[in-house]
Length: 68
Image (cartoon, rainbow, N blue to C red; front, side):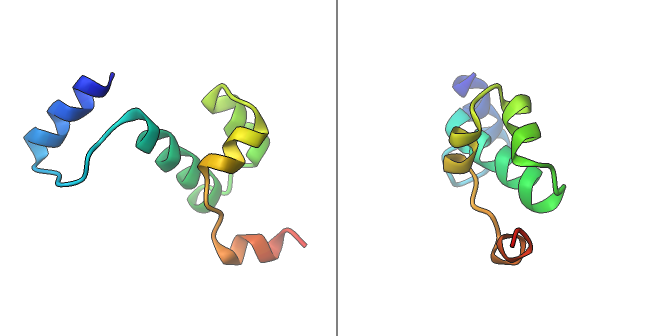
């Protein structure tokens, strides 16, 4: 999988290193911060535990305030 990301990176001229770990972080952040998907649903989509999603994602400050 990483080799395909490297090909895309080279073709598009992307300067940062693309890899599956980065893709998982991006997916979790997009689900939680942009699409407002629950942590539980994101965990199911990623095929991992809720505790792992919390490690991958950085929830924006505004959304953290909404949870109280």
